[in-house]
Length: 188
Image 1 (cartoon, rainbow, N blue to C red):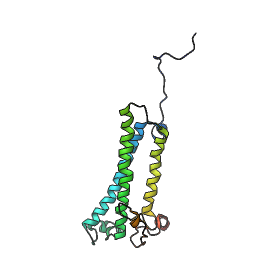
Image 2: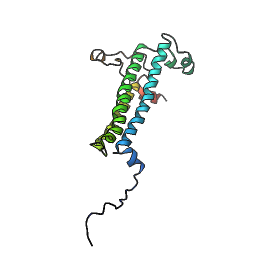
Image 3: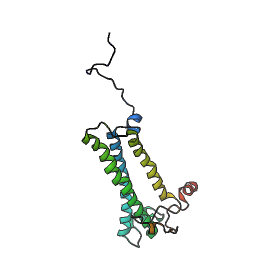
């Protein structure tokens, strides 16, 4: 009886991976590419909603918004304050650049196609690749938390140049959640 390597025709059984291991903690470049693609599409919808709100203000400048002012008795249907407009514009641009364009181009297409084009089995560092995807979600939650924070989100325009970005914006009546989300939750 000879002990050694199995012949090349031997069949190796691979256990089926569970959902968590296959999709949540995946190191497969194709799965990570698909995750980047669908996450980018979710962020695209959020950024597109912010763009829609900016366009609505452009459509009815210095007036109440016809449909929203009847649906929402709070300040959502009324004339948008210029500081709130700048905040929406800045958040739209930041989300679209850093959470849509870069993740879809580099994350989705790069992860999915580059290893296939060069004939590699996977990316060079698969766990680091997985971590790059999961670090994107806390960053997105932090930037979205600015919308609910006291003082609002950044409002320095889409470029966020240091001169304009370093100015302190006054916290006026434009914040739809005065005192932040915590005070809103405490009011009931």
